[in-house]
Length: 292
Ligand SMILES: Nc1ncnc2c1ncn2[C@@H]1O[C@H](COP(=O)(O)OP(=O)(O)OP(=O)(O)O)[C@@H](O)[C@H]1O
Image (cartoon, rainbow, N blue to C red; front, top):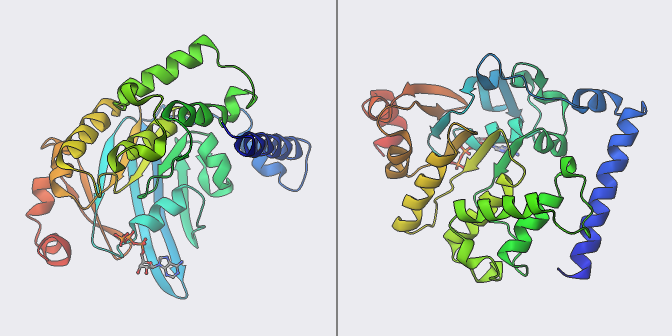
């Protein structure tokens, strides 16, 4: 690891600790601290994510228009829809990047996502994968995973500390899961596009997220990589809730296996929900999206 990265990592940890301290000592953001301290999402009702009547306007244009959606604990849900349907804006709301004008968003039955900041939302167990892979290109695959582990506030590890046996086991487990065990010492910049995507997913998994948001994860992947990604997501289902935004219908078909629910977004709200076959034969869906 380069000294610059070590320094940046240490600074990030120090900033995070200072923020938490300020919140718990009654500073300006005390309310955030109270929500976050020891907060665990309550999944007793079986719902991982609940969006109710979410509206987001940009200069009067409604990117989300009273969007309501519920994702169950352990569910793998595919979300499809034409360009501009509001898929990215929806993920921005869930992760705290965009604040809605109206509506509620909760993680489990108890955590009000609209009161939390982006960093805090990541720490309570919501991981987001953007379309483009963002890994540390100069570092090895192993070091990327190590860094992801140490960036987790719950781990309380110093960026300079040695890994414990349990942490090493966890990294090995993730390497196996993302098919990168043989590439552990390889520089991440030399991986294929698909392998970089897997590495980034592995970095998210190091923090053991309860909910994973994945934006077009197979865009630009080969057919073989796409199939392996489907296998990976299917192996995560159950232990994590997954929301997958995709345009690749073959991939959606592999993930949903003929029976899982697909949600179609259009003009900022849900146009249709059902199995892939249901929505593919829905006239409105064909008209605005699939028939194009
Ligand atoms: N910051 C912004 N300012 C103004 N308009 C925006 C902003 N962000 C998104 N929009 C508009 O909101 C609508 C929804 O955009 P969004 O990116 O959420 O759609 P999407 O379903 O993710 O599309 P795509 O499949 O192309 O990624 C679009 O019409 C977009 O132009």
